[in-house]
Image 1 (cartoon, rainbow, N blue to C red):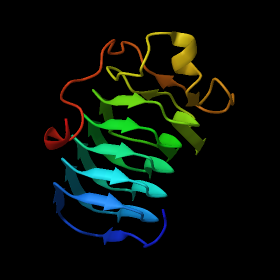
Image 2 (image 1 turned 180 degrees about the horizontal axis):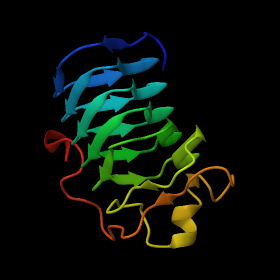
Image 3 (image 1 turned 90 degrees about the vertical axis):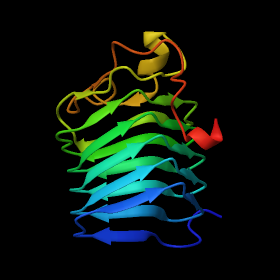
Length: 177
């Protein structure tokens, strides 16, 4: 079950790369702090948290994050999150505090059970997440998938338009399409 093992912990590393990996049943499969990490072409499934990081320059590209508690959870990070399939998690992306220098686009973020995007209490500014595919083009349905300023007035909002009207064909690992 999820949480059967702890995490691959990374701290203060100048560069770590994961490619073509499968992470299952962890508490936080990859957990990074104050590092530079590249995660590409990998699968995260049945973890409490797939990828968790703090103050890390992170490239998360062409991965499948599914059936996790949270697919991605971060604060004070500078992530590039693109071309991922983020689906069937309880929470797709959980931003706990103060995102800076981020790029979150060209992902398929669909069918997450509780929310596709959750903001923690220290996210008072809007977060730009354009050009993602949300499974629909209905603003009402898309915005219903966010726990942001639409639900709590002290939070910023997810800025999702313009959005992708079709799934990104390059999203997810190339070997798993």
